[in-house]
Length: 194
Image 1 (cartoon, rainbow, N blue to C red):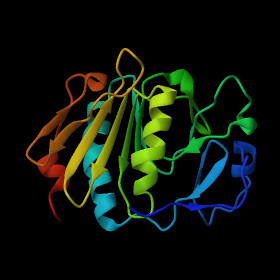
Image 2: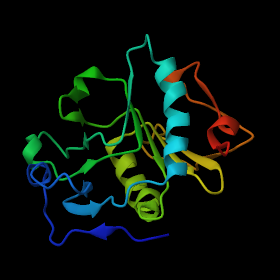
Image 3: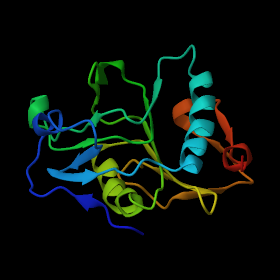
Image 4: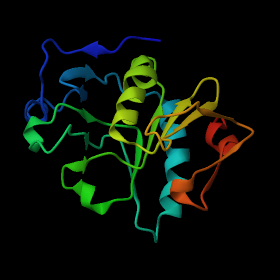
């Protein structure tokens, strides 16, 4: 797994983040800035599309919304002002079911579902740092998609507010989620090589 590139310094906030150049994409996690460059691979983008489209179609007449990166998710620690928030992430796909969390800047608070598709430059961050972050902030489901070995790890928040052992889905499986009751995603179609 590759290590993410950090911006020099610490204690960065959303107030700093919104003033950085649009030439690079960054995420803030507890005041540390992680570079998201280079752009995702074509395979990454194909898988993202194959996951997002069935979710978007399913949600067409429902209250939840689906968004794909770049889309800012601000995760405050308490009631701090936006400019003081030290964690801003751009997951590959998010589903938000509480419309009060949505504003023109993106989402403030934990989405119901977060999907990250592993890339060489960000895989260690997705597997370790973000797993812990999403659990702590109460993301109900976190999917980690492995685009080379064609499997998905699904972490679900338990009653103890912790993720249990992940469910593992391969390209022979269909994923269902209680968050989107009635949705079924066929992973054979998601992982099919184009």
